[in-house]
Image 1 (cartoon, rainbow, N blue to C red):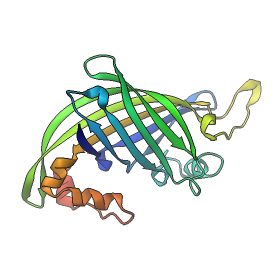
Image 2: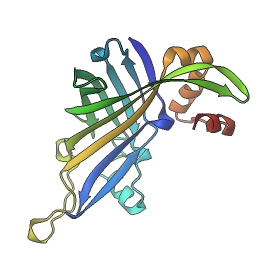
Image 3: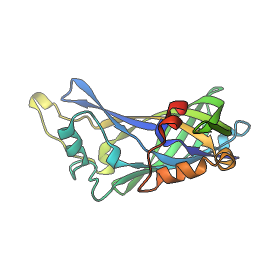
Image 4: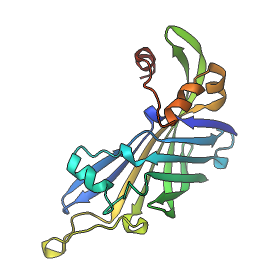
Length: 214
């Protein structure tokens, strides 16, 4: 199996809930770090794992973001990360797979099913300034699932007239993931940059680097 590192700049999670019975609210999580073991010749042997820092939570409304970080919801002070550890379980079509992941939120772990689409592989250069350090293989996945937030202790609620609720219990989850072959990261020296990004004091990428990668 080939080891791949999640590319945090191009990997993101989204959660969607219904607010006051009538509209959808979307939240986003970035800076996701982790690894995938994947080989197209043996896709059902695929495993994946990672961490999601809750400090990256963003819904576009600061007051709502603060409430979501509070003990009413994710209690980010005591549980600063969400973790996942999963595997492919079945092949549904050429590029579509069933998977399951052990998802940990607020210290509670539940196994949830996922539908995964493999987006393919592409070869890209790695630039440092004006120097091309070599080619890197990149792969992509899209995944979706659904959880009951109360299973994880994310249980704040308020009632509305006529039996309505402020926040829906069922939460839809979406993940867009890009991963780079670890062997290629090591060969080009790009592994140092990604290790720095995963540390607490990760530096910003040089402007010329982002211009070539984005």
